[in-house]
Image 1 (cartoon, helix red, strand yellow):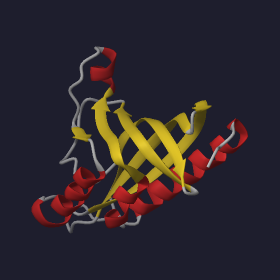
Image 2 (tube, helix red, strand yellow):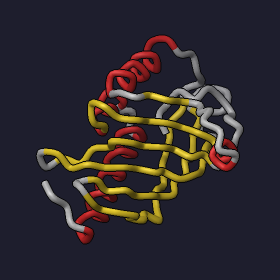
Image 3 (cartoon, helix red, strand yellow):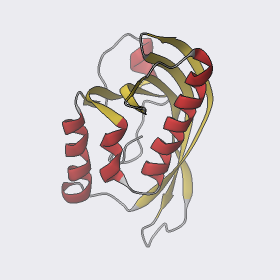
Length: 163
């Protein structure tokens, strides 16, 4: 499906809204479906981007790797129970050519503790920018590439839930 520049903003905003809704409502088994089979999902601190360092916190290069992250999240990782609430805004469409939309959007994640000690305590967990490449195939938008550039180089706790 060909997307023109006027449709591109709506496509990206709807994809981002569905993406964060999936994460915020703990439907992580559905999360990999937001990506093409061959994709890149990367979380990297802004400091490393600024210094042109390729070292990132998370790097997945296929939907299968994203599915493995979900399995690890559910079965192997030990972490304090929490929930996220994303706020996404300032979506910018950088280009829309050859069936690929390049977009940027700011994000803010508030994490609320669900453990007995800190239950209900909310704090800013991460802020930064999504750098996305999106394709529309068979009427469905998916990420070919999602690079999460986190403003801070510090992670307060285990980075287990997708950003």
